Amino acid sequence: MSEKDKEDNVKNIESEMDKPEDKKSHSNDNVEKEKTIEEKLKESEDKLLRSLAEIENQRRRFEKEIKDAFEFGSFNFAKEMLATLDNLQRAKEAIKNDEKLKTNKDLDKFLENLTIIEKDLISIFEKNRIKKIEVGNQTFDPNFHQAMSEVEDDEKEPGKILHEIQAGYMLGERLLRPSLVSVSKKKSTKDNENEDKKDKN
Image (cartoon, rainbow, N blue to C red; front, top):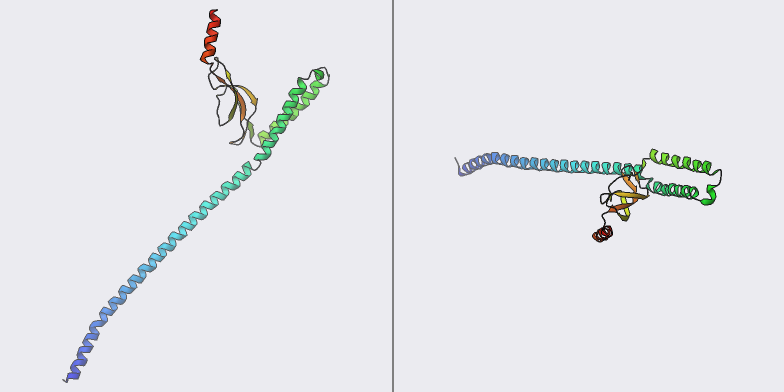
């Protein structure tokens, strides 16, 4: 066998030995490519899930805003209408206590008509979820009441509502306006000492 033939055989053997290694390297490249695609798919899935969650949050937020707008869109109008009811009640009291009008034979009929209008207004308010805050024998609550004065009273517990100056109202669960009230407080020690001295004398 010539030297040339020997060299050709060696080259053929080497090329055959190289082929499986090439296949291995190709298969490794494919695995790396497959992993990259899987990672991309996972990233895309994460992004999609986040986008869906964000859309769902926006949908809930919009629904809440629409509900609030529907429920409380008439808030300012309702507040203004309370002033009408206040004025009607004040007019009724003023007419009732007017010395000149007391002698008028038609006064009772007129007051009765005002009472009917007042009741109609209150009925309309209640149908629209506007309700008066009850203060009778209640303890002062800053969430619903506004104290306009404090009155010393040892017969009542401190913080009890003694008198309603102006009615408060709720619109559903939302405060439309607080009740203006006077609240009881304990007599000061000086006043108690003065009363004790008076009793002794």
